[in-house]
Length: 467
Image 1 (cartoon, one colour):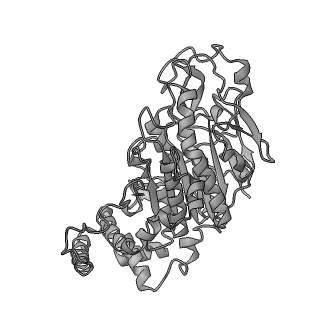
Image 2: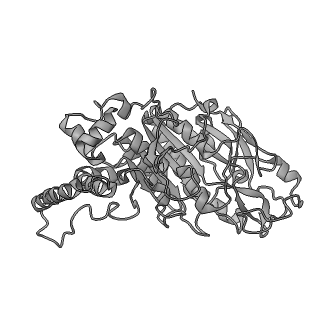
Image 3: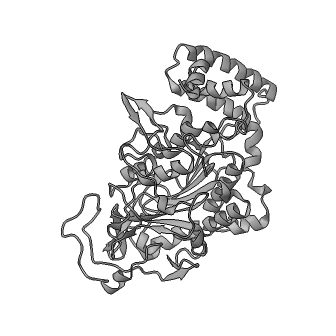
């Protein structure tokens, strides 16, 4: 029996595992390597910020320059039948309406919609031939987050929480910062713990609200809710819950609820400072664009992600765009009209986050990921839009353990399908876990008689982009 299993059984569950660590006098910095330095080999990454573009960001209009589309613009060379998941018959080939230029020493081509990120291409590693098994948003979003097309499976953040635990006792291990306009496709499904203990699910923080964590403090109109009364009430509640749990130790939901109460009590001290963006300088706010539209919302969340990571949150997910037909990257109607606004809302904040992480030395053990659920067709839809396309799309990664400025794989001349170096979510997830010191084939959880893992029965580490 390994240490995790012993303490889990001896302490009565995963919440008690944290309590047992405290009783043993352990702190995050003194925990053994398997909990904070990598489970199976030396870790290069301690924390992750993932930027997810909801709706399917168009690769040939952002990072995947396709001059062949300019030559063939207007020609009907696409499928003669509507592929599964497409919302309409493919139209004629359509060139990008945006100018592309080469940037950096690597000469990476970037569209004019990303002038700020373009300056940082020499710090990024590009997966140019990502692919999905679906052209539908819901399953695609599940696949990129959980490795499966169907609901019910743990997401990347939950697996990381389960495998490595927390870096601090005062903030959540896995934080989700959704777009102010709404949750992504599948609502909270993409940050679910699935069949893992519920304590590992993402903690949703609404950064646009006056109180990002609702009900963390009692309403001022309840004068009887003093700190002393709250402390006594929480202690009584803890006692009752533990008695209830002792008779139902197989239900992780109660364990998670107990853990959330205990965490909330600690967050009353740490969260106000962590969420207080007014502590940042005016120049920092200007760099992230928190003082102007359209970058205010995404800029605040990128800045908050950096602050949370500095203070010990292990995995932060920042979403751009809600589910639905508007206000995201699902540009069916018009690429020229719909893509620039959503791109402008994230471009400056992302560049500021890159610069901030690097200047603070956080690049030494932090991983930054930019991705989406799938790409878009090189064929026009309705005149100047683009349809869903799981055939190929782009992901970039920057930070610890990454070979800056490289690219792996490429799509075909139209940007319709992968041509070489195809990578699925399994390969991306395997690579991320590898950087965290985890062998993706050995991080498993027994569920319904199957040793489940994030990468299912697939996946290989993309060593070509690693140092």
